[in-house]
Amino acid sequence: MRKGTIRTFPMKPCKVCGAMMQPTSGRSTFCSFACIIALRSEVRPSGCIEWTGYRDHFGYGIASLGSRTMPAHRAAWVAANGPIPDSSQFVCHKCDNPPCVNVKHLFIGTHAENTLDRIRKGRSAKGEASGRAKLTKAKVSAIRRALARGATSHKLARQYGTSAQTIDGIADGSYWGWFTCGDGLQNEIEVARDRRGEAHPKSKLTEQNVRDIRALGKTSMPRKQIAEQFNISLGGLESILYGYSWKWLK
Image (cartoon, rainbow, N blue to C red; front, side):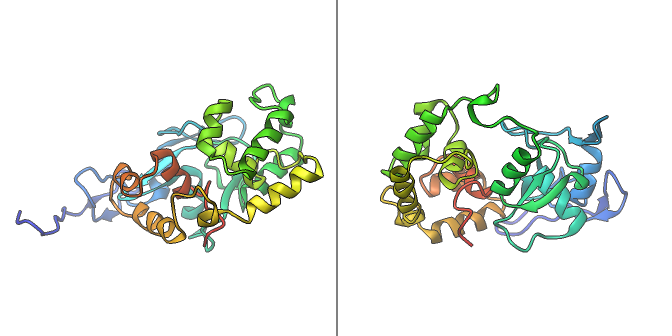
């Protein structure tokens, strides 16, 4: 094959539905996310349909089709209902079961709405009352104070033995949003939230950088290469692509 030419592959039937498809690589076997989910999921007695493929460390399934990769439950929603107009919105679980891809158990909303829904229905203990909680009210107050004064999520995650996504969730109210601090600290936090994004003194990225990262994430460019190009960690890159950070930026 000549250099610079695009390789094409012969049409072949989808492994699930049998429809003829144009493969994007020699290993392509599915014509749609719907077919991938149909093959890589199992019905549980609870009514959940659980993803049986690869899962991230939070327990969420990851589905790939050609150069497109997204959380499996989001892929299930899109396959059943079409594209989500607002990319900052989350596909949330009513069942609080991360690998579930049953569209009847899913709804569109913010991460904070999902958390509040779970708490309102009594499906989880709050804060340090949870048996799996790593943080206490005192630690959350300290984290909020450190964030307000410019500490980074990754530094605080290492210090408190948790993930950067959890620290980001504390910063935007998705996690521990029910817990309020004293008025002085609360005011300091509100001021800090106005310094989000490139306005933050320790930000490595600009708003345009983030838009470029999102665009490259939809291509076949390796994620490690994208992260190196913008001098960020792979975890930080995935946090942007999955909407855990910079989700306020349209």
